[in-house]
Each structure stands twice: as structure tokens, then as C-alpha cells.
Image 1: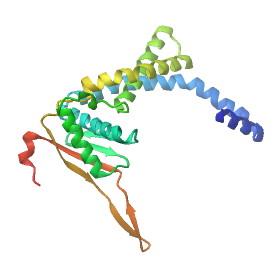
Image 2 (image 1 turned 90 degrees about the horizontal axis):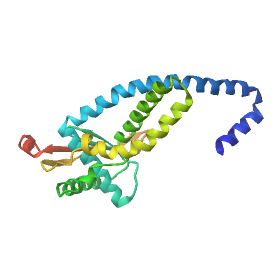
Image 3 (image 1 turned 135 degrees about the horizontal axis):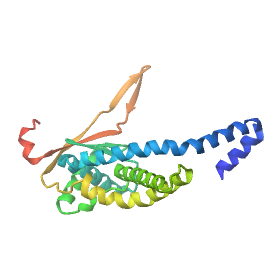
Image 4 (image 1 turned 135 degrees about the vertical axis):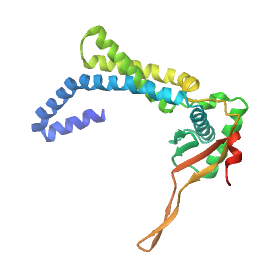
Length: 229
């Protein structure tokens, strides 16, 4: 409704722009299937490579699981958040507004609970794997429709998107559990949370900087002896 209202106002006050607007939408409809074809080919080539890269790195998968588990623990307590994460071999980033003390506590609780067998904590519905699966399924579906029908149409694009948004979120938890995370974290330990912050002065006035990027550093137990505290 807001979009329709905006278009009506637009046509009322600037009717001379209607032909240009119509031409723009027609061009978009015409070129959309071509652009989606290129995007689909790119997705089919890149998504499996990225999934394989993560799947073959055990350390990265463990930290990916801990990243999800930490956010899950926080959201169990405070409800849905806008926190995002990114796993690395030596830990994981958490991005968003969160108390670093709470974050470290949540990470340690998450690790403890996973060691006790709560493997479901390793899966999170907002994981990038979900979007990757949506894109991959859309690409496969669109190219399959193109092969079967022989036509580049907007309808095929819409059908591909419909199928992908229906199946992607359903497949994502399985992909996470089997390929992109590992709940086998018995040998993992958390060293702490690292972040920047503090304050600065400008024009003679003090300003407080609130950090939003945190790095939870982890280590495998066999490497603890190499760490200098």
C-alpha cells in the first residue's frame, strides 16, 4: 500500500515522468532474466567451493559452532538480537551492541553446554549458510527451468526465488550440522574477549566510543602450553 500511494503521488505531481518510469520498469523486466542467469552461474561455481573450504577445516568449523552457540545463549536470555558473527581459525568475531563481560560469560556457557552434549547450539537460523543455500537453490532451480523451457523469463526468476526461500531455510540446519560447524569442541578452550574502545577528545570535549566489534579468542587444549599470558 505505501508503494502504491507513493506512485500515485508521483504521477499526480510529475505526470511527465511516467513514460520514463514505464520504460525503466520494462527495461528491468527485460534485462532481469539475463542478469539472473549470470548471477546463477556465478553462484553455482562459488557456493560449493566456499562450503567445501569450511567443511575441510576442522578448527574453523569448531569456532563456527561456538560462534552460533554464543549467540544462541545470549538470545535465550535476552530474546532476538541483531548480533552477527564471523568464525576464524583462532576464534570468532561478534558484531553488535553487547556487554563484553556478558559476551565472554555466554561464550564460556556455550562451550560448557556443548561439551555436555547440546549439539543443537551449533546451529543458528541467521547463519550465512542459510542465505548461501537460498542463493544456490535459486540458481539451480532457475538454470533447470531455463534448460527445460528454453526461455529467459521473469516468471522463471520468480519461481526460482519462491522455491529457494521455501527450501533454503529447511536445508540450512542440516548443512550447518554436517558441513560448516562441528560440535566436537571437547578440546577447545576460551582465552578471552578482545575489543577496542575507550574515549577520545575533539574540540576540547570528551567523547565515549562504544565498541561493537569483539573477538572471542579460542585455542585447542594441546596448544595451551604455547600461549604466553
